[in-house]
Image 1: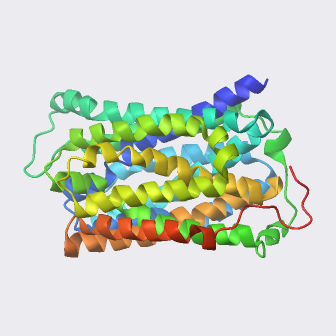
Image 2: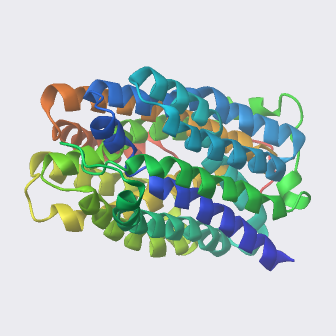
Length: 404
């Protein structure tokens, strides 16, 4: 019984992050080149995702905790996000893309925190290694998608009669929207097989979320997560534009993702062992330092031969920040509030911090050039890492809560 559960939650990760592997590395490039939006407009469209997430992420999380229907909600989130990604193909203007991105974000921004909460529930009794195994399949899906997509476009574009356009590296790039929609919807279908009882269905009482308001470790994690995503998220979204500004192509973008993900896979798979050695707080510090080094070199030395190999630090950042923060929540939040805890973390970090980061990075791109967002982000991330011992205590449950 346990093995099928792990299989299906792994499939949810595989399809959901596989869809993001088609979308995330190329969306800003599509907005900039295919639609001709300005740097500031690109920043605002990207900011629509976290802006909407500010509202919907905690709402989905609280709904999951109060009803205990976390698996059922994940089905609807996956299907809704799939439809939203596919609908982006309809937009042709800044206003249309902002609106469609906002609609899609009503589901897509809840997909990862909801999947994280469900995965932690399903793997809770099987140890941290089981969590790492399931989450690793998401990175595998992302890797397959990001590597296969450019050759697929090269093969399919002539057959669809898509003509080349001056200044546009890939005129058929809009195909990523329906393909992303199909993969993300498949994650919702895979969630149909997840259990509806046991740890995954633990319910919170009305007003239980107030237990988190005065809990210092959790609140200080939210502050740290906000600052981390503020300095790291925006430059990642604009990375294809940075590569194009320095003479690269869509194939270059795809190739640079390979070392990022090849390092990420074993680090996430071994996240259980890493957690036992350095703890969630240590993972967070390592992730932010790696991001700071990566963006500092990109910002100040864009022609350096180190640029390509340093992209492997992306895997360290993901394993440290994107995995470390949810594991910190798992250690600091009662299990009946895990969806709310993960949802609010995503709201403050990915959404609020990411929104501010996208807007600021877009402004820096337009007014100071493609290197400026990376120089500012690198310095900011290294400064934040230096402050980690002061900002973030070791995780602990609220007073009076039994240890898991």
